[in-house]
Image (cartoon, rainbow, N blue to C red; front, side, top):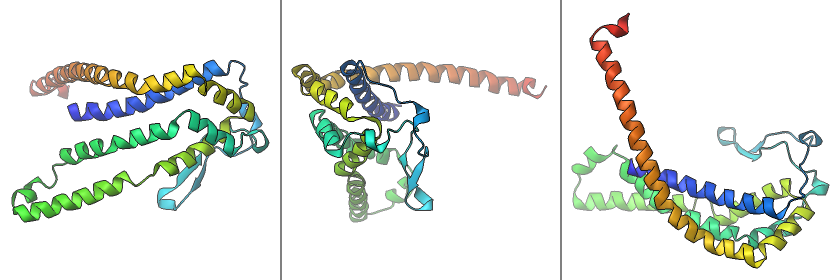
Length: 224
């Protein structure tokens, strides 16, 4: 249960960060116009890559026409003042912990591991470490930033971006970005505790109903 809770917390951190940015953007752009879905003639989904693993590159019909989109340079400046790259690095920094937890949860090799010598176990651990390091580098921050830049360009025009740059360059916004890691650090244990508490109660309720159902089977009630 604790392992699952920590992974859920990681997802919660991502959501919390996105929500913080969304709220700030809403406050910064009170007059932002909403794009009419009917204005775009582009397909909703476009994919690249092999048929076995297509990578979606467009997931919304509310995409601005090319001539209305902010430039790549504008978006890069916006992401810079928003410190998005730092946040991406922080998120990737949490991956080794999650990968380690997932590895610890795996039971498939326990029987074989028990029969190995110390030297053989060391070889297995070295192999595991090798692939853990590969997993950590499987999607670089620079790739993330490139993909994110394209998505921002799909949805923000030049006026939007200039307004956002002005806001995020302000003392208030920079203070928010300074405080956000501390806020999330305080929030994570609270979220963990709440999830654990609610999960325990849900598990107890589930067990109670399942026990009652199994008991009814023994009495023949379930066959009627």
